[in-house]
Image (cartoon, rainbow, N blue to C red; front, top):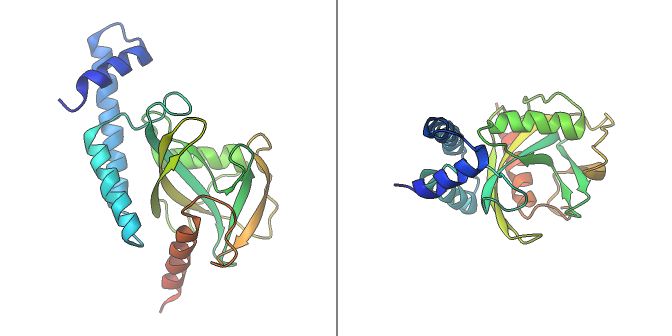
Length: 219
């Protein structure tokens, strides 16, 4: 029954639905949202064997449960979906990262996907909330170009499955990050020898982005 009993209990507690019909409608909504995410994941072209493994594992996870959206911070459910929205300048081969206050790392903007929210909508929302801009998905397209799964140890162990979107920016423009989330930001060249203290997969993302832009320049 594919985890039906656990999900019915969870949804009943969450929605406080007075009838089975309400719970059923919610479950169908989650199933539809999960199917959309699975379709996005299938379209990602892996850059290396690790990303191939992450894609395979993510598709198996999505086939096993619809409980993929974080409902209670930081770890319910213990694995959940994240959208990164990475501000990039294709003309300067550079990426904008912010010094995240809680993590103490240089990270792209982004956040957890809300229940039944399309990950692209999450990316747009996070760009508006954290950068104060309207996202322009014209650097590598409006689909996620990279997928990672990362175990986070604190404050409670959980796993973030992250879809990496890119949005176009300019290294010559001053961006004002949300001060509640970030202690300033900076542009970084796609230099493998100057990788900041960041997401553990940032070097691989830099490499995939560099390859994508180089391919676009081919005649």
